[in-house]
Image (cartoon, rainbow, N blue to C red):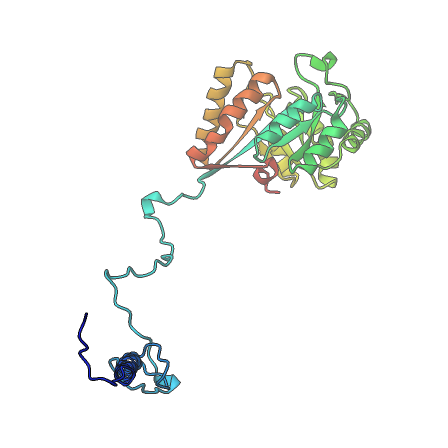
Length: 324
């Protein structure tokens, strides 16, 4: 049997109560200490009121600068920033590389037009000033003249004149002016032919080796041309032609052909004569070439007419060569 360690009549409850209060006090103190620590750290606190931020390095005082004296804040860069590129002013190319002004002019006249619409389209595709000479009684004379004018080409009447070898019966010679015709007949026929073709700026001769060698015949032909304010271009189908000189003598603007491009119908020869035309124009400052709308000629022009730029030349209308 155990012995009692406490005196008789002693109660355990007071001891327990004191211990409980001590423990409660310790717990409360610990709680207060922890809550105070959180408050001093700026953390969440349940007992202590008011917030407290962590201590931080105080920011430098803000100095207000008047707007007119404020300067933008400089941002450090790792590498120097390249200056923005601006368009440099255009510089003149060196004298040796500057495109030189044209040294000569070339006028290209295509005779016997009005028989094909396709030929006109191919000439338009050249994109160069070309003068077309239309036969007055050709099947598409009117349409050719209208479209050529609309597209910016120059139109001539290709006037049929009698030749020495008697080509008066050949195709395209309807309305032929023959030697021996009187002035009234010449005037009437010429007026009819000019009226058949609108937008005519001048006249050049189709054939005519016989008539162009006759000064009196030429004066009868050129007088109505002068009255209409047109120019005359001597196709020079004969070395004996006086047409150019008679026209100048009458005060009519006139010009004369230098090169026939396609008398032989050979593509190689056509190109050779085209380049000859360019050389003459470069040498003399101007040259007039006449050709016909054959397939070989049109193909050669398409492939080579653009070479005139490499000769320092420009293409112009025939009227410019005649001073119109």
